[in-house]
Each structure stands twice: as C-alpha cells, then as structure tokens.
Image (cartoon, rainbow, N blue to C red; front, top):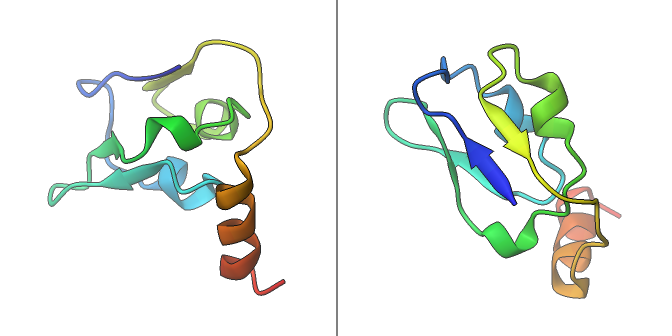
Amino acid sequence: MLVIYQKWCKACGICYDLCPQGTLAADEEGKVYITYPETCTGCKICELHCPDFAILVIGEPRKAPKAVEKQGKINQGS
C-alpha cells in the first residue's frame, strides 16, 4: 500500500520520475497522486528518494504484473 502525505509534498517530482511502474503522477500544481495503485510493487524507490518524507510504502515488495513489466520494457526501449 502506498500512502502520500499531501501536506508534506513540495511537488519536486522525484517520486514520479523514479517510479519504475508509472504508479505516480502529478496534478496541475505538481502534487503527486497515485494513478494505478495495483501497479505499485512496493519497491520503495519513491519513499527512499522523497526529500520531504511525504511517501510511505507499507508492505513487502512484490513482482510487477506481467502487463506492467511488458509496458516498462517498451518505455525503456528494450
């Protein structure tokens, strides 16, 4: 599960830029939101790189769904 503390978010964009699954995006103000929660693998990249501690990942990491893995490979040019 992914929790975003909106009051702490400074809209830096690091989390959604680094998310390997495309689970996060930004609104018009640059604040992060969860696009597709089912795609989050719990890798904690967003949590570990957030300079404002605005993201909390709860639970153990899991493997990405096949459709998401395939899309990630397409986006990375593999």
